[in-house]
Length: 83
Image 1 (cartoon, rainbow, N blue to C red):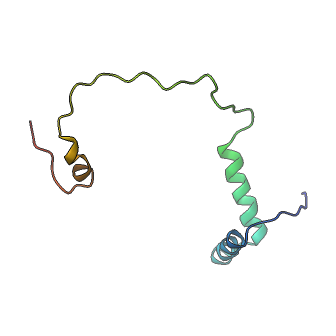
Image 2: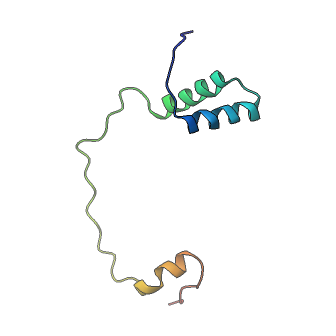
Image 3: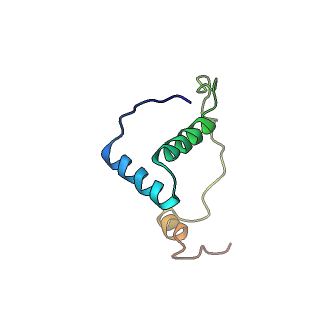
C-alpha cells in the first residue's frame, strides 16, 4: 500500500471526517472508497467523443399544449386538457 499526502479543502475534510464517524470508518477508508468510486466511473482509455455531434432535431409538429402551461403541467399544478 502507498502512503501519500493530499491537500483537502477544510469543508470537504470536515464532511469526510463526519462521514467516517457516522459509518465507523477511518478517514483513510472514506478517502479510499471515494477514490474507488471515481476510478470505477471513469475507466482508463475513455476518451471524450471529439467527433460526436448533436443529432438533427425531428419535426414533431405543433405542441399539444400552449407554451404558457408547460411549467404548470410539469409541476403537476394542472392537468393537460385531453384531446
